[in-house]
Image 1 (spheres, rainbow, N blue to C red):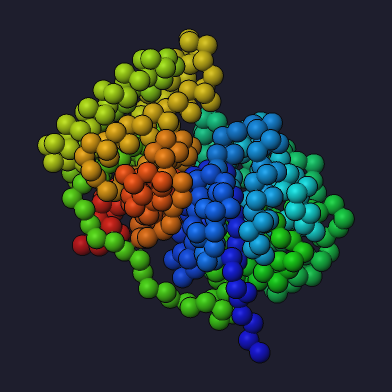
Image 2 (tube, rainbow, N blue to C red):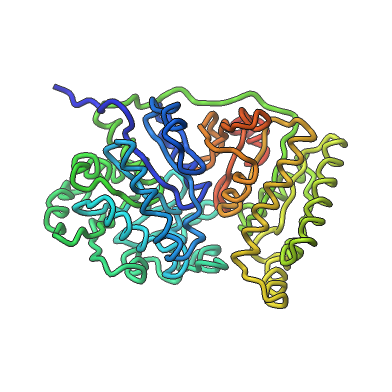
Length: 458
């Protein structure tokens, strides 16, 4: 008799940043598995309204927080995920493994999850070929503009201002964050059908982390089979949306879900509102393209965020400029920097140093300010579609909007769908919102959001 997927939720997850959390929902939704992502732990009543979803997630901000914050906030999150009753619980991390011992520690998060959920082992899958992430012999590679880079030589991640990657071997990188034993199931082992035997040999009483390679759909399907067939023992998994790509690949291969569900798209709109706190060169290229295609790029002086009063005035100025741009028939795009080489990046660092301000606190203020700007634009203009660029920015800005849940409604680019927002505030409920990580999307991503789906290239 053919195996069937169990009823109810198949997967519950917590994402350590907002854009990455949306990517999990995207993979499951576009595989035909209805999903919802809450922006804060839901009440039992709120959860009951979405009890029929196959994937239920909670978006978070752990990627930008220290271990002490995790110690306080993550155990209740893991307990809440366990209460959903899904057979797989996923701690979702960035596909470029953004983390360090003192900030966004994936090792600390795994340790807290093990203490709460008591799995026999923790599979770790970061590879996601659909967005240019590949892992071979434990080393992570990420593509930029179609060119692959080992993570410690990546033009962005090797220079990340908060969590620079100087180690591409994920086991070595993770070992700085946890004393837990870390094992590897490499690509040849997957290809030779020996993954289960390797897993059996690696297991022990110490609940090790098992890093699993992946470079293509067959290797991801093998990883997904290993997780699904051992779900009662592992229960807790960690990694990027590669976890969901792996499970979906296995379920398709096993005939448990359709191979090609219908594509999801929505109607185009004339104008959207965009705010960006991303310093990525990918986002920089998207800003340039947007300016050439009906967007008005409006620079926000982030250095003024070191002073709350000055920052409030700067946000008001930017809001007025954005509304003026709308009045002239363009889509406003409020941004803080155009890539890592923008002078605005070191200027912010120097402003924080001169004012004796904590960079983390100032960044939180910038993210919330961008959300306030976006909310004011939407309230005044009546626009129904918006975009927030930047992983950490998306978390603070979306919370500032008062949105409490999202579901994917249209495919834009792998990793960043267009979503339908849910909120108690009628002005926000039904808003169409895209959250874009710094490294995600093609050069025409902003235009694609406006168009309601990928733009056909001539």
